[in-house]
Length: 378
Length: 258
Image (cartoon, each protein chain N blue to C red):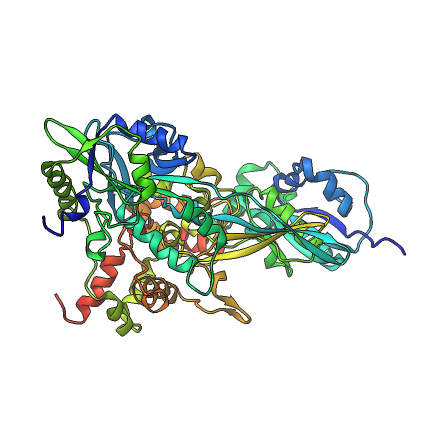
């Protein structure tokens, strides 16, 4: 058996109807199951009560600044790829209360809160999204600082991955080495096999608790033919990849901190911050204090922030990055270059969300390529 | 020891529809708490009782459209320690600033039987164009939660949480699907300040820019995008020229589509 096939040795096959058993088994095990749902003509992540909640038969057409959900092949569960939201919404929520304080004389007292972290099962996590979680793991548990709120939810979360059988128009995971097949980081992984005479899922367990859940649902051992079909599905996704990141982009950008392209992209950039909001690895936040009118009770909240706002770099004397070009450069060079120095990994996983959800369709792969080609490369 | 005196609050009206000061009365659940925390010294929409100035805080609604208003806002400023403007009229001139783009004398002559009775300025302008303003609360109308936040911050000597970032951030925080990217609906969100609670996009409509231009805007790039969404020049002009027509960034963009 080749090395490529080895991860699939213990794979099983389940019928499409068994997806419902999988969801209910997870719910019975105490997980709040979150997965893809169709809402406002897009795929978002929300509570799944049954497999009937899944957006069956839909695919997405994605391009710079454009997303359309369309009816596709009947009965197919995972023809769409990633939508506007990512799992960061659950692990690193947009608003999170850090602490509550009560006034006591001239001092104040922190109100202890002992809520258990929610126990999520993420259903339908794509390979790029697992890679994004691993990136955020390094941010929120980096050896010096650990974020207990993030870690509580992250460690409890059960991951059901879905290997992509189709790539989206803005996907470039293959060139970032993050997909389309999940290499670990999951409890269970599904690959949808769609052939003329059969429609099944190949399922692999990636952890002990994954095996335990798998043991509770009807399945049969996968044959060599099954695993070949599953690998063929993800190979098709590789071939259909909509975008590609140029090679060695980190050193490339580092060499080109002064480049005419930064001014050129600034003419198009709206500094609206959508790219950072939809990015599954962007982790910046700000802190806001709120009080009641009497000032007896106060709360401190953390909220998503973005390097595209002026307030983000505001220090005594004003904002540091006033020009759009400097803000775009900050974001792109951090994501693709200085992230390596800070966290030992790329900050980009190739999910393509920043391309699709940019209102004017600025394409990070195209920006990188423009700088690459300016060095006389092809 | 005497109890610390409560701050005196005044609410002033200039050219406006009253919708913004009504938001203070709309506070309902919180209104009694506000009334308990401040002395409402002048607020004709709520009470006929008047307490003389000076005032600790003046909330100013409306724009300056008459010579009398241009004079009166100076008196209000002189009597106010803090002057906070509320709403698109006070912060940008409001919908009535549409007259800034036209010949006002022509309107008066064609509408009124006795134009000589009408004394009006050629423009509708923001309060900031006439006196110093300490804080601006955007919106048409303002968001009552933001109004409470500003009063609350003031009473507790802290910074108000009224971020000047884009409407897009508000949509993304709320999990609202982008109407422009997912549906092709033109939306001013990327150039508009947040604060409404992403009202229109959450009902599948594009942002109308009620909260005015955000901190840094690139209206030109967004207008080019609108053109690809089948908006003609006239529609693009009208899109930028509504409640915040006279806000600098929106005014400049609408003028390039004349």
